[in-house]
Amino acid sequence: MARKADQKTDSVLDPIERVTEVIFGALMALTFTGSFSVASPGEEVRTMMWAALGCNLAWGLTDAVMYLIGLKVERQRRVTLLQQLQATQDPERARQFVRDALPERLGEAASPGVIDALQRTLLEAEESDGAKILADRLDHVQGAEQRRERVATRIANDKAAYLETWLAHDTGGRVSPARFFQALRRRLPDDGIVVADDGNHTFLVAELMPMHAPRTFFSPSDFNSMGYCVPGVIGAKLARPDRVVVGIVGDGAVRMTGLEMATAVAQGTGVVWFVFNDGELAQIAQAQQVPYNRKTCTVLPPLDLEALARANSVGFEAMSGDADIEGVLERVLSSAAAGRPVLVDVRIDYSKRTRFTEGTIRTNLKRFDLGTKARLVSRALWRRITG
Image (cartoon, rainbow, N blue to C red):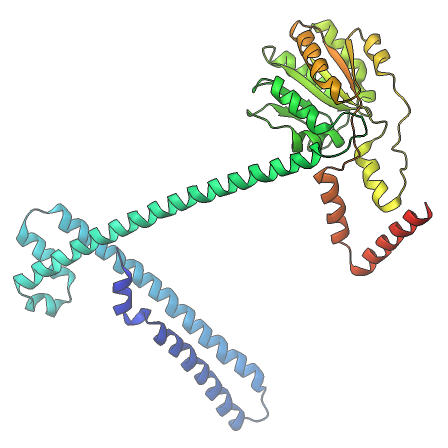
């Protein structure tokens, strides 16, 4: 194993000599170009200058490659020698190994005492290097573990602080997303399955609902297909009948595949759909509200969810505010455990934007040039003023 001490004694590795070679090469190129310009004033001197510098660069690269090859060969020779010394029990054979590794004339002139001293030095240096390498690696592992703990602590603290902002938010009497997911998490087993549709609720689940086991959260994250949740919940329950399966779906997406609830009744699958009902396609509506101060084609007509549940012969519960959360969860999960599917009308509060919505707005604004940003901001302010 090659060590830094060996490298310092090798003239090829001397940094001063490396810098000197570079300066010398540059001076050669300049001298050559200057001489050529005096001899042939009509020629293109700049071209010759670049050609000379290119030659010097090629020379330096070739020198570097040859050095690396030589370093690898020398390192392998040393490894081989150490392996031979550690493997042999014959002192005379060990001396011969060391003598063969020395330059020819020096090996012939060295006495047995000198050879023995060199052998001891090599083995002691190898043990010292091995101990140092082991200590360095141990320090690296311990440092990585400490960094991992710091990162995990920071993530936990950031999540707790983010949750507090949701808990402190005034919901205006409607259901708090944070309190709903806290209560659902407490009642849901670690291997319980949550299926989300596409919409604002998708990111609320991601931000506020911890998952305690792999493959327990399903969402149409690639193509964002609205209407995924209602049939997805049924499929998850049929595939894992021993698991508790619930769905989080918006009042827009439930209009697309809501009649599939009849399949759950026909198959006797005990599942729960929580419909986050706010009367809008909230994810798009919030993105429209910020720059335009208006909502276009994202406000939904009223939907009688109780009638929808009754039409499909599934149970129904209404969750109008935070006071209803615990009681409704207890009843619907008990009903699902008995094999009866249930639809829950959750009058959710969407007045606080998710991190995803805030990040999308900032990212889109950041990618515009200054002029476009100024126009968008001024237009948004004007619409705020004029309505």
